Amino acid sequence: MTLTKILTRWYSEHKREMPWRTTKNPYYIWLSEIILQQTQIKQGLPYYQVFVKTFPTVFDLANASEESVLKLWQGLGYYSRARNLHVASKYIVDELDGVFPATYGGLLKLKGVGDYTASAIGSICFGLPTAVVDGNVYRVLARYYGIYIPINSTQGIKEFKVIAQKLIDTRNPGDYNQAIMEFGALQCKPSSPNCSVCPLSINCKAFKNNAIDQLPVKLKKTIVKKKYFNYIVVMTVDNSIIIEQRTGKGIWQNLYQFPLIESTKSLSLNLLKRNEIFKEWYGNDVTNISLFNKEDIVHKLSHQHLYTKFWIVEIKNTNNHTVSISDIRKYPVPILIGNFIEAFFDTTATIE
View (cartoon, rainbow, N blue to C red):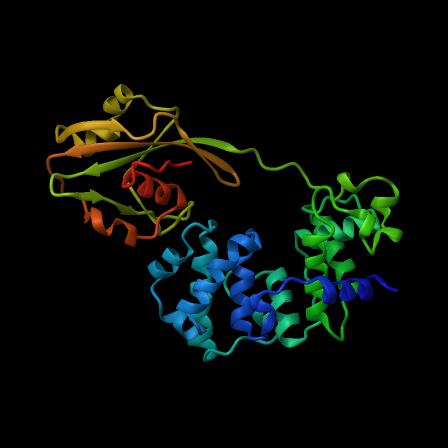
């Protein structure tokens, strides 16, 4: 039996029941694929369910405000996915009359859609024989064929795509693509897979050569930068608080935060008071300063670790934009700040 047939048979017996597997509606498939990029199913499933309930059609998503979309996305990370999702929905509605493109090339025109997502939507919804290659597929193919080319190299990306394309079941490409991804997620797991019950083990080169832990090969990660964030949580006498919207193309674009001072090292209270930016912003208006967290909160992103302090600053008055403390939870914020908000207004909670 061929690798393709083994995987599709395995999938029919072992696949998990997921709401997006009961439909071929491209809107729902697209939503699931974008939400599950760089996100595990157990974390992404509740978000998918909320998005479908809140925005049941692409028209509903397109007509929503970016702020409401970001708020719903809060906690998933990689917020550019949400912004791209929103932009693409407007394109589908405004330029395509709400009809999803049914070709691989057309799908690639959607903001935030690359080869993997276009291949997944195209094969599942429209029967296009386009192979998906994600982390699970890389792992299955690298181990089965004993391929040591780094999966994140230019050569590796090209060669694995060629191999995947040769294997696809042209009669039922959607099920095959889902089969190989599901197999990588449940059977050919990253660590300690149970090879004794694997239907591919008899011909798996990594298993024969005792090289399961060596494959797939990945080039060394980018050096992680260390940054020091000091959030100034400004409280006024009338129970309002200063927040601002992040701009630019950096992390958390268009999300809200407290005024931020970046420093080259962790600041003490005395160093904060002497900081030129802090003095320029608040001058002699400060009546009290306290540190919410005694130790830096380390928030880890893919390419940077943020060592964060939340300074509670009480002032007499301010000309800055403020919101009522009772409304602070309405704004879309990074999970780091969301955790602080919950902990700050609930003294029994902690932030991590």
